[in-house]
Image (cartoon, rainbow, N blue to C red; front, side):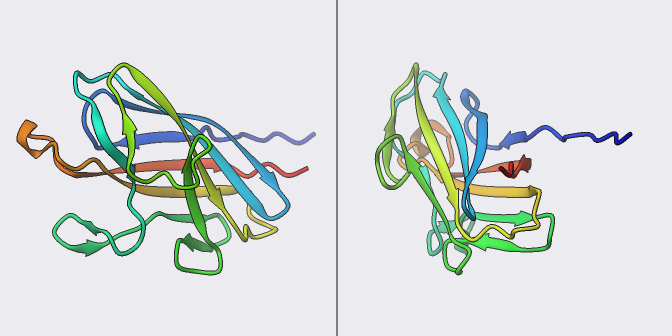
Length: 155
């Protein structure tokens, strides 16, 4: 008899209170992992520009920071390597400078190419998120989404 436990994906967002990220699912096609989220704006503010910060964007005092992921086999995935990560919003190619109106939600899909054939989970996925122009409301322009224990389902 074999007993196993599957860890549940955990989502932590240090951004504005009321921006709620919900992990929906992950699935694979060939050696590509797709991770789906729904982002809901329960604040009293519209976010005219909202999106993922790719490599080269400034984050927290000019540190270069981009979407990164780490699997249980010790591999790192990011926007600049052969194991690439891309993000999109609904049917738009990039999750980059999209509108997130108050009382609405958007779909976000993270695509991670080149998944190791032996990897079973993404231990950590880090997505820097920008929402500029809200400094006047006391909301910083950048925040970070961290998701742990994302399953890599195999056929």
